[in-house]
Each structure stands twice: as C-alpha cells, then as structure tokens.
Image 1 (tube, rainbow, N blue to C red):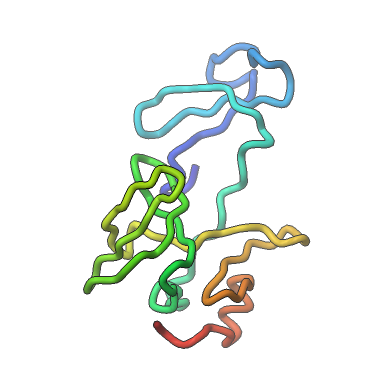
Image 2: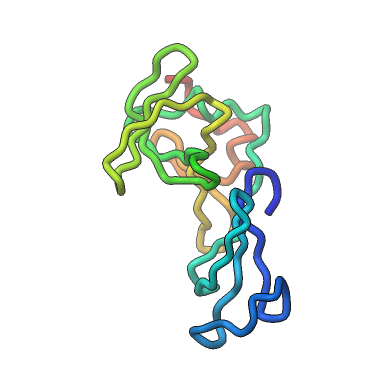
Length: 142
C-alpha cells in the first residue's frame, strides 16, 4: 500500500489465500480497486518509491520524450511525455500504444533504483536521486 499504492501484499499465512500455486517465492497481492487477489512472483514486485517532494518542480522540467508514470485504473503505468497543453499532459503508454490526457496529480517521476539501491529519476537525460535534485541540480524548466 500507501497512498496511491493500489495493492496490499501478504504471504501464504495472511489473507486466507492458502499456499502459493507456484511454490515458494510467490506472494499474495490484493488489489485495492476491487479486492481481487492473485499470487505473483516476489521478484516481479518492487518496493513503493518515495513520494515526490512538493518543493521539487520535476514536472515543469520534464521534457518531451521522457518517461513518467501515470496513475490509471488503480496502478502506476510507464508513459512517455508527448505534449503539454495548459494544465494537461498528453502521454503515451508505449507498451499498449495508447495516448492519455493527464493532470499533474495523475503523474509522478519514473522511478528506478541505482546500483546502490537508492531511488532515482531522470530529467533531461540526467539521472539523480531526489536528494541530489533537491541540492540544486534541477535542470531549467522546459
């Protein structure tokens, strides 16, 4: 969980799900949207990234063609910024070849983990941690 997490994770002893069908290494997840449950490989899950600090105006610096994540149908999906129009952002979910119109509240940075396990995101082809961006390394707005 957490805010906007959309999923609760348990193990074979929680939630009445029984034993995992694929054996060890699986966890039972429950979707907040409809309460449905399924077993998934633990290796396919990632920890929830940190919230983006409001003092970091990352979205104003997001350049066309860069990755972000869109809150859609109860989960975060990787998207590519296509265009801006006022307070709306046109993004492409490339995996599904689908264009979405999103508000700033529906977008967050495309988080990934660096070699040391720290959460990072990329702006204008520079990948840094939120702390590094906070330290004055933000590129100019687009």
